Image (cartoon, rainbow, N blue to C red; front, side, top):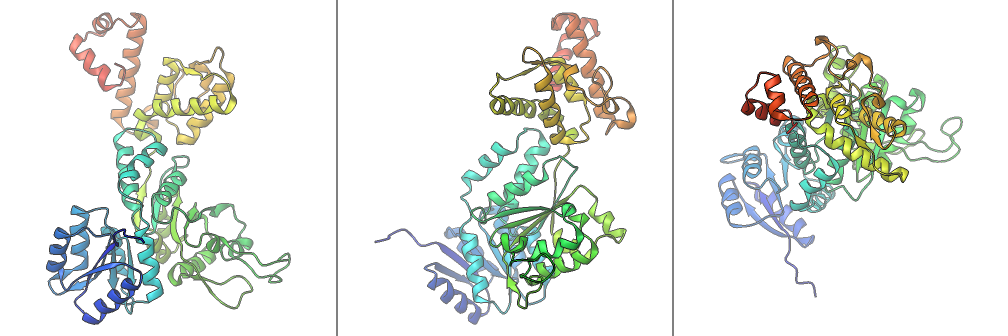
Amino acid sequence: MNTSPRQKILIVDDEPDIRELLEITLGRMKLETFSARNLGEAQALLQREHFDLCLTDMRLPDGTGLELVQHIQQRAPHLPVAMITAYGSLETAINALKAGAFDFLTKPVELPRLRELVSSALRMPTAGGLSTAIERRLLGDSPPMANLRKQIDKLARSQAPVYISGESGSGKELVARLIHEQGPRASQPFVPVNCGAIPSELMESEFFGHRKGSFTGAVEDKPGLFQAAHGGTLFLDEVADLPLSMQVKLLRAIQEKAVRSVGGQQETVVDVRILCATHKDLEAEVSAERFRQDLYYRLNVIELRVPSLRERRDDIEALAMHVLKRLAKDTGQPEARLHPQALEALKNYRFPGNVRELENVLERAHTLCENRTIEAQDLRLSEGNCSADGTPADLTQIDNLEDYLESVERKLILQALEETRWNRTAAAQRLSLSFRSMRYRLKKLGLD
């Protein structure tokens, strides 16, 4: 006999008929329900009970469902909240998602959709394992990365569409995978697609599938990417490369939650979370009329920016060590080490290709180096992005003055340390610094 406690659902709605419908439906799912007629009653129940899900109407006699979402975000951020809104009030639903709601339902409530939403919310991983799993996959202790991990943790608990922006090679697909893997869809497919790599004439067939005989070469029925991602996540990489004609069809599929195969007569319902990314400025693409504004607003409910490697130079050493460990394992060779000058050159390089370029540089150097030591010359860094001694080439290539001055300071201190065989007192005297000032600068630059 199963004696495990039933999961608890909080229902907040001032309409008795809606509350009764939700109570009956959830009761048949073997869930325990608690009901509140207004914001005050809901907040009182939240103080007394632990809940696994909250369903709330948007309009309440003494406030709004949005206020309840914000209240829960502050006190129980890992409790999923689903908003119930009037039919057609998309803007309200989007505001709720931005505030931290898990998902939304529209009135009149469709029971299959309700059961699907509840089942999905109750599959959320427990709070404990989220951050640890993200830290293992997303390396770096810099403030930008700490903030990124925090945002991924929060977005994994939502069904909101997310637009992931960032430069090429910065790790946008990894971020998308982490959002998927830490959420309730983790056991379902994650389907990545490079929108710029699909020929325009095959795009509709690739996204929505086709029926046998619908065009020359269609020798059998084939499901599309939406069908393949059903129940899971569809990641649209380089979404800005979609032609306008396809943007219209994509918008309709997202709005209707259904697709029709090329040559098909009936639509197929699909349950897919959409994540997208591009290295282009999507807002600028909208202004240039190369990207539909209505699709932009559907995809960009929440924007998540992935920092460039230049913005987190302090992470370069940890990333490099990780890459070298992986290369040693893959090749079966002893692990190579970075000479201090090679590491310094990496830290002063601009990395226009970001983490992907760092991996490529180290893979090449790993092959070229002698005695398992990577020297600065083994890196073969592009001269356009650093000078011969590893410092940035000129002010036009520096992101800001602080970065430039820090790189110059780092170079001079390292030079003084090398010339004095790393005697800190002698190096400080050579630079006309007090020993205390030298110690402070070494710590600030990560050289202590």
